[in-house]
Image (cartoon, rainbow, N blue to C red; front, top):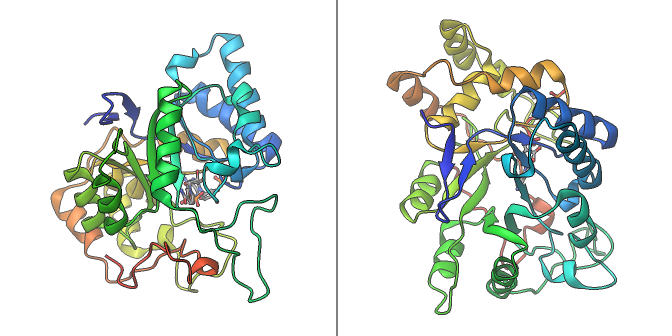
Length: 316
Ligand SMILES: NC(=O)c1ccc[n+]([C@@H]2O[C@H](COP(=O)([O-])OP(=O)(O)OC[C@H]3O[C@@H](n4cnc5c(N)ncnc54)[C@H](OP(=O)(O)O)[C@@H]3O)[C@@H](O)[C@H]2O)c1
C-alpha cells in the first residue's frame, strides 16, 4: 500500500496528513512540531484557519533543528475563501504575508468563491445569509495558473467542487493546468463514491476532510451523528485491535484517497498515523460503503442561495 498519492504533476503527496482547522495558535504550533517529530510530512492549512503564522513558525523551528528539510514537507493551503483575487489586493493581502512563514506551498486549493471579498471572514447580509461573491471560478483558476507559472506554488487544486463544476473547469478552452486534487468532505456517512471515482478517472486525486466525522464541528449536527461510536465501525476496529479513528482513516487510504485528520492531542496525532500495519477486508470496505446513515457535515447553508453552491441534495 503506497504511503503517498501521485498527483497529475507527478509530485508525490503523502496520503496521510495533519488537518489544522480549529487548532488554536500555540496548540497549532505544538501539534505541528509534534506531528513532524512522529513522522507526518503533509500539512493541510488555510488562510481562514488563522493559524498559518504559528504553523509556519513550527515548520521553521523543525527545519532549524534539522528534524526535516523544507523539501521533506508537503504543504497544502488555500487562500481567502472568497477567492484568490482578494489575496492580491492591498486592503486584504490574504496569503501573501504568510508566504514568509509557510514558504512556497506545494498545493494551493481554490475554494468556490462563495462570499464577497472583504475584511470579514464571514460577512453576513441583512437576510442572514453570507454576502455572495459574483466572482467567476473559471477566472479565479486563471489566477491560480499564474501562480504556478510564477513559481509560487507547485500544483493547484480545488475544494468542494462537484462533478458539474469540474466538467466546466476541464472543458475551459484555454485550460493550462488541470486541478491536481479535489478536497472534499468524506467519511463513512458520506463516502462520495461517485465523485471520487469521477475525479480519479480524470486524473484528479482526492483528499477527504472531516474524515473522523469532525467531533468538534461548531455548528449543529444530528444528535445521532457520532461516527467514532458507530457500532459497526467499533466492531471492525476491535477485530483489528485498532481504534475507530484508525479504521475510518484506513478506509480512505485503501481507496487511494488522501486524508487529513485534525488533532492537537499528541496521543491522537500518533494514533492516527498508525494505519499502515493493517488492512480492511473487502467485506469490511463494502460494509462501510453500504451504511444507510448519510450526512453532510459541511453543508455551508449560509451560502445555499449562491450561484455556485456545490452540494446536491442527494448524498452518495
Ligand atoms: N476544504 C474544506 O472545505 C475543509 C473543511 C473542513 C475541514 N478541512 C480540513 O480537514 C481537516 C479535518 O477535518 P475536521 O478538523 O473538521 O475534522 P476531523 O479531522 O474529522 O476531526 C477532528 C476532531 O477529531 C478529534 N480527534 C482526532 N483524532 C482523534 C482520535 N484518534 N480519536 C478521537 N478523536 C480524535 C480531534 O480532537 P483533538 O484535536 O483533541 O485530537 C478533533 O476534535 C481540518 O482540520 C482541515 O484541515 C477542510
